[in-house]
Image 1: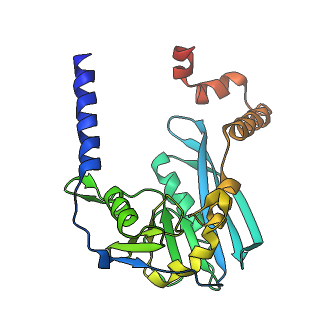
Image 2: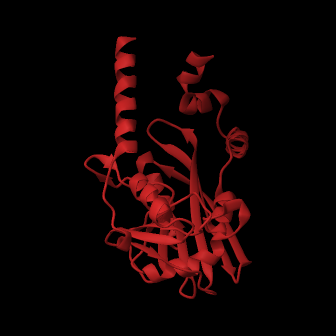
Image 3: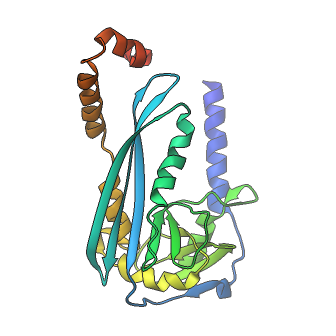
Length: 253
């Protein structure tokens, strides 16, 4: 119990350091921008879910999809799912991202959910969080707080490092996002797609793509049960349980 209390105190101390981080920001480093109509936007997202764990191999459902919008109207949607067998489950996210990167549109600004490594003029990665730190403390919170103070009721961006920005896409939004791009001019073209009241400040095509590719637990359970039913044609229930039974479930019952 004493160790838990000590750990709790350390956690609270760190949170106080995050909140109290005092950095002198220059107003000139925060750049205001306006909406600029009307470029086509393609939003790409993906998800994955472990269906079965065989110990030495794993079976995942991977789903990727995109939404294309132009002049604030959805003009195209696409979703595809694949079941992958892997030996190392740590590569699944990489597999998903490779499938996402197949959808880069030459005639549209392409938005990805999360960080991106490649840098092209019409591609941006939008992240809800950032791991960038200063003096061991998360930097993003301090940028957001300074931006809200100095750029109240404005759209703005702040260059954190090369090709990485903090961006507020709507004056009334309480959210600031990390954006990876080598073209800061595209912020103004993304902004018109961030006015939807249900996702104010966030590109609604990305929100829609997220909902399209999300894998619910009930859906995964249905697919798992369907796989087991089909597998019973050539294997026994004992074989299935030997391969996939998780003893932790037994311990937790």
